[in-house]
Length: 227
Image (cartoon, rainbow, N blue to C red; front, side):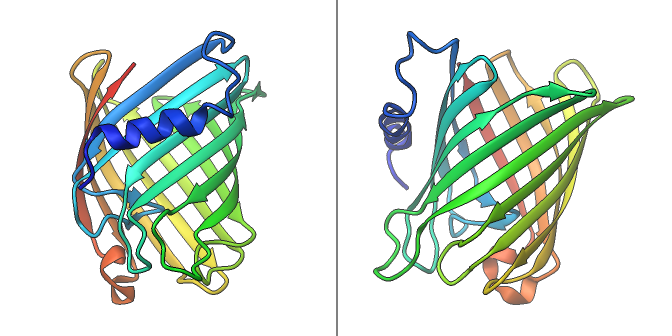
């Protein structure tokens, strides 16, 4: 596992050319945390190891730029994942949208592996009674390694059970040309110890355990500090 400061340092450096300056941004925020495993699209992506992570974001009006860095590990040799996003968060007809272009990079991948690729993502969120819902559609025209066009469709619902605790669940479907198709789901709870410190405990699973360890069920705990 890398030193905890490494992902945060990389996140700050990676964001620098994307956001003109912190002073010019309408808002600037960040998050430092550690998870018992790193999860991506419902799959284990840190070989079962503890994964520190960091995220920074600068926003100007409805537009934003962010960088997420996490320890990761996979058979292709990568030891980190960096997700850089440029996005827009408009509101219309009672929905809150989040429309983004993502660059996903997995440094350390062995030679010949296509480890740097683009994704296009759209979220639509709306409160239905006590349930906060979100539909996510993610598309990559040319994904990681041998994966070509790929879709990720996810529906999430969350309910606040107290002022500090929220329970949520999500179901998703992955369709990939040149990759594994699978269904995924998760269920868990997030609890805020303070305005800045939150804990999350979540169960992840898929219907393709036969595809290998990343597709198996797992319980993941994480703690994060936001600023």
